Length: 306
Image 1 (cartoon, helix red, strand yellow):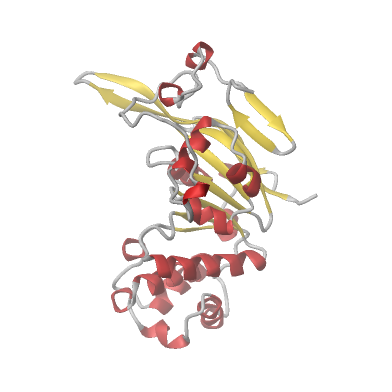
Image 2 (cartoon, rainbow, N blue to C red; image 1 turned 90 degrees about the vertical axis):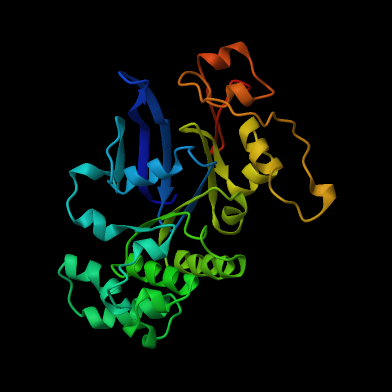
């Protein structure tokens, strides 16, 4: 059995959002999210914009605190840990143009985490990190504006792995790249996975995680609708929302097209019951007030159909 690296336990994240001039109302960005990730595993978190996936990433990175629940790393609550947490858990952001300091050389950018943690042999480790992301040493003297989008993202990945972390949170790391460059970056992530790094790979594009993830978690309205082995989730989806996502993926051949009918109108997301209820063709009255969690053979689905 694989060693659990990170465990998210029934995490909620509540925000107060303005309603009118003088009122605020509760908005749950995350609701009862729970999962584990093992060493060297890639967990894909998939959902539409505003589904809560970036909020989840921020909590794992300790950029925000959960309203309820807890997150454990190697059995320890992450907010009780010091700088050793940022040594073991790193991040790759969506847009390398905004996440890399344009005034710094690549060498300085990659070296920065080593300086923060007081590491030795920094020049050697920077060169090793650059080689791991398949860039030559000549790039070390360049600045981000001298690089292509794919090269900038490789630099961002080098910075993320220079401390040899156990877990990397990758938040839409291919979204700003051309399709051909996306494939190269995904190949790089696969190589790093083989070296034993675990990833939480956050994306709106389910095709991306199809190529990379071991397991997939589908999130909507702050709730994990479904989670399980990649092949099972993609080939036999259980939750109506997962079916909806898959029905909107371009297919290679018309015979692969899935027939699911959903209204395209705008819906507000209810803060009680199932967040997908207003859009769901399988809606039942109880979906307005509660959601059952069904678990079987490592598969989890939050849906009253089961």
